[in-house]
Length: 145
Image (cartoon, rainbow, N blue to C red):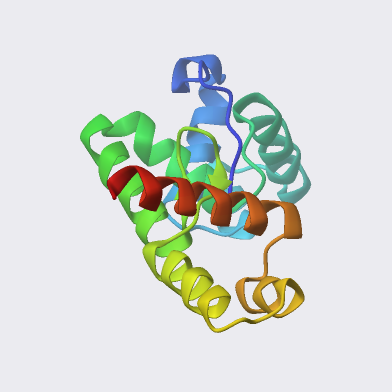
């Protein structure tokens, strides 16, 4: 998962940082980037740390996704939908959202009379989040009826 500055673009990076970011996005390791750019591995790692700071990315995968978003804006929508579907990440707020399966599980377990601690353990979510989600689901059902 990443938390990028919404205003960060490739233009915010120096030409060398852009090269390092692009090679990282292609999947090259620090040693391979160093060889390609004729620089030291430690220098590559320093560049990566600076790139992470500028973009707000936390790791190489997040940086790769950020680079591809910058290079191909239509791809950004595809990446966001994959993040939502596969990882349950709300790309607007960068937090994990409840999937329909989790909603069904929550409602089913509650209808079976399970305790909140059992539900929290099954969903692997904080108790406040689970209870709030349950309340919102009940409100939706009441409005629909």
